[in-house]
Amino acid sequence: MLGARGSLLTLEALGARASLIPSNTPMVGVSALPFRRGVLKDPSVHRGKVGCVGSLWPDKFEEPLASRKEVAAIRGTPEYDRKVNVPIKAALKDASCSMYRDPLVTRFFNVVVEGGKAQLAERIMLDTCRRIKEFQMEKFLGASEERRARIEMNPLLVIVTAIENCRPVMLLEKVKVGSVTYHVPTPVTDKRSYFESMRWLHLTGRWERDASAADRVVMGSMKPGAQKYDGELYPPRTIVTIADGLAKELVDAYNLVGRAMAKKHEHHRQCEQNRAYAHYRRTK
Image (tube, rainbow, N blue to C red; front, side, top):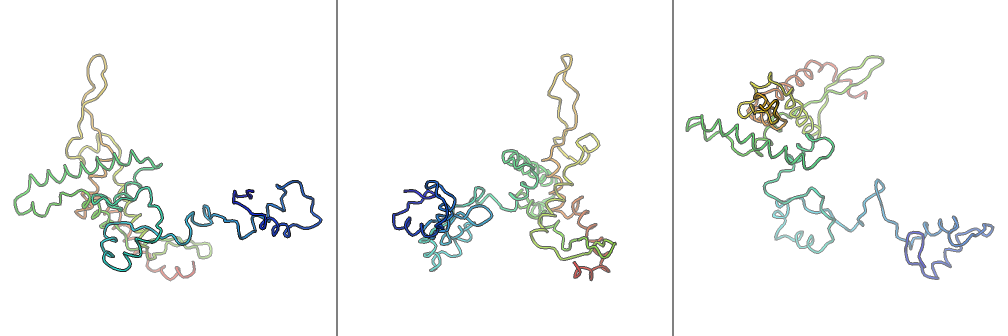
């Protein structure tokens, strides 16, 4: 016989469960409510943990290793032999052991793309890396032999360094004391610091896509129109995509200049101006 959760129940379990039902309770077949409560309270019935209650995996399952570096660090040790023989949880859907994939870069493009459109995020990431390569290649070809050694050609390293350069060290929080609200400078966590850096880079990379922004795009911004009108093509117009803007801001932040770095300096200036309110942080 099957219980309320589909578990196989023996006659002994049914007899023990009958003692959980009060004698004055009317029974309407096996689907009566007291009987179902008895099934759910029986320790012999396995109850899986779902959603916010807990994990779907039993307690003996361990977390998988996230990268090849973690595997190489424990190789040849007793911990490696133990990890081989213990049950491991399934890896996340975005997990990868590729040497060309950086988790910080993946997180940045997840911030850029709203709505969880993975295909759009991948296309923007590839276009941004291509534009960064074009910007750096143009600088490389126009530089002297001494400066060429200092020009970074790896787009992923440019993106990671730009995010690190834009990270704030303080955060402004609103603290209400009486009827007055103060902006109090407080220490920032690593997770929030990375998020603010990515958000500033994203906001500064999304400017108005018109001719007034053409001076900020160096190459490939003038493209002919794709549609025809009275048998003739539209005149060439400025097309600035989100990949162009992100590439420009990332290269500027890599060189410690640009609008994202200006946002960081302005944020630190506000924290310095409100340092007199730092003692209000304890009252929050």
